[in-house]
Image (cartoon, rainbow, N blue to C red):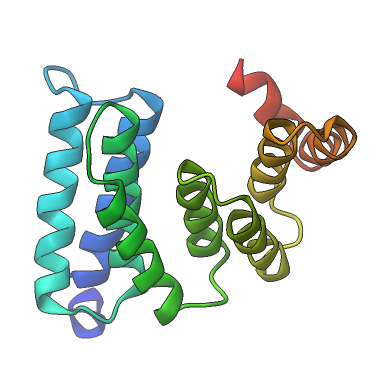
Length: 168
């Protein structure tokens, strides 16, 4: 049945790439593999999915996430991450994960207005998701608006109290 739905496993490969980005983010690379290796493996999987079908937002999101993680550990492909996220957002404008990730990437460019806008689009798609509030809190903190930062952080804690303790 799975082969009938997706004979080339393109969507599955896209999601595998996204999972590999999370493994790199949390430092959970498999034994003997560095974060750089996990990211490279993820990009190989995602790029093969994109060669088969460049219209899947999940593939572009995974590519964005992998390249953003690469930037976070010293890589220099933030522009590619941004392009991949923008492509995903063009394909799936109501996808909360895509909008949120694009917001985080734009934060790296110090583009507070667009970053905030994408966090709010993510919240329109999924009002109960805490991560866009986390982004809004960081943006407010960085701009010196401690009242808004505290209010957003309180929302994160209310929506997902264990996410705060897991972060520290």
